[in-house]
Length: 224
Length: 265
Image (cartoon, rainbow over all chains, first blue to last red):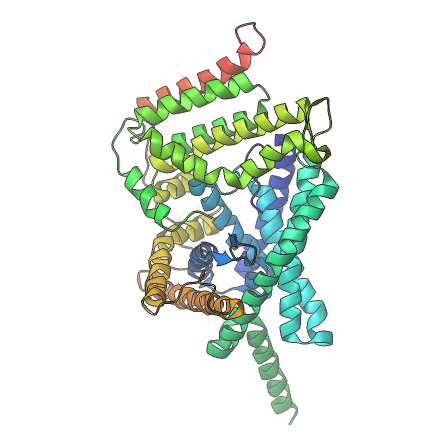
């Protein structure tokens, strides 16, 4: 899903960089207001963890291998797509600068696909579905959709760049990532369930519920 | 994505000693990014070929093995090369060859595919050169000096420090799994079961990352870290070799651009 250098014209790269700058500005503002002082080491170490996690190859049924992207996972853990934007900006800078994985001129486009689109689609799909279909199916659908939509966004960007025909790109990327998305969904569900079991306090929705419960208890005590 | 081993290989390459290794991190970063931007901008194959020649000269001057460098490029190439290879078959234009099953090769597609591939090779040579010349921490320092936002610079700096720790952690987990005969690619065990084991490993890495993040925060706190802490940057002036390298490279870029308007190439 990483677009390399030379595949998108410079003027379009500039537009994606502007989108990245705006997203990063709001994400850092979110981190300052919503995370405590721990945010700096936490986001840094988490990004390093995600980077290592992304290097774990998982077999894909037809013989090749892939890896988890994790945009939805990060957004769901923090209940904020901003977290995915910060983490993916760092991860993609290092991947691009040191491993040639994703172009430096295409950094904006790559963060847009994996961080912004991946994080937003993952989180808002989960928010829309977790009441009607339940938490676990909602996580699965959200993470699958985050991969699928991000891949289709790559196809659209390549078409806009004049590098790949739209229909062929949508079909090709869609088909491949529809399968990859199933693996991403299974991994995201198991990871979140494991975190829920071992350290529920790390999941933002538990922290929010706890704060809401405490506030409700507090108001009851006051009214009594 | 590249294998964990390449992270340590990069560090080995950074330890070499050459005039280019000694350059200021900011100069290396800006100049190599400028070369990538120019490679993306140009549509002239001969310009790209001359850029590659210049980069090969830089690789030789850096005492880097040409064979290892090009093996690295070949390993990264499939990520984008796949799309470039498809161009002759999907691009509309003058048909120059017809293959069985009605597959056609067009002249425009062929030249666009060659252009994409050439840009990719030049950009990847720049990346291999930059990553072999500058240790990761030096690149982070260069970003800081070039005005990266304070919060992001601090996160970035810590991120690089912990990257190596997590690779070692992952390696330890893999070794522990191997010692118990676990092989993720072994088809004798159920696919879903294998996937579940990977997910547990990811969950453990995540947990470890969170806990390590807290530990790092407390150790930073005990050393005086606060919300308003600034990162110390030693004042480092550019040396004459930095100006020479920057001047020569900018001269090469300008020269190549001007040559387009003459009959030299």
